[in-house]
Image (cartoon, rainbow, N blue to C red):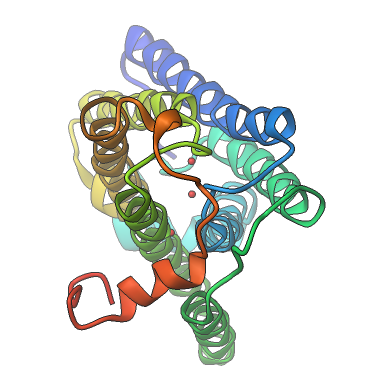
Amino acid sequence: MASWNSFPLEISYNVFGWIAFFSWSISFYPQIILNFRRKSVVGLNFDFLVFNFTKHSAYLMYNASVFFCPVIQRQYHEKYGYREMLPVAANDVAFSVHAILLTAITLSQVLIYDRGSQKISKTCIIITCAVWVSAAVCVFVAMPNQSWLWLISIFNTMQVIMTTIKYIPQAVMNFARKSTEGWSIDNILLDLLGGLMNYAQMAMQSIDQGSWVNFFGNIGKTLLSLVSIFFDLLFMFQHYVLYPFEKTVASPKVDSESTTQLLDSSDHPSVSENT
């Protein structure tokens, strides 16, 4: 079993990891508070919430399995070497549990607050169903040979895919409305900090071990940070550069179904969700 070679790097690893945990965890609250103060979820894309819940569910399955299951830990070491440390830390598991709870609370706000004419799109429903049906099929494929590491890697891939697409409906909706009203920028700033700290944590482990297996051994965590950072910068550009006076722009009550039609239209072929 691998152990740390440098105490300062081990401390840095834990510090960066928990900063990422608190940043990502706190990032859920500004949106919940904003919804509560406005008594409205108009401007918050519902597809984003559904994709985000799916993403964090898959990520929790991956993190909890690697962190707690001895069989999967053994299969990981057999594949990548017994000198390699596990790519999942306690803060990863804690974050996933917290993320599920807070996303569920945000979804519950959709049911009780003013939502205008917004609703979950058919595209979102189809994609979400396809993801979970595919996951169920993979479970049956993995069972005969007990390929549990392969199976939880599928869940890790799922969360990367959902992370990539979950932001798209909200970004398109902001462009369509020419406003970011109803979408909390504090959420984005905290999410950006969490992504940077998550990447720094992995770097500390790789430097200590003299190996970069940590990055492609947990490719999901690597891509999670990079994708999150990219979209956080995009939302910051929308909020601070494109639409800096979003509260004075036209009414935010738009139909999210019309936004989804933008995703499906031939004018946007490249577009056809987690913070």
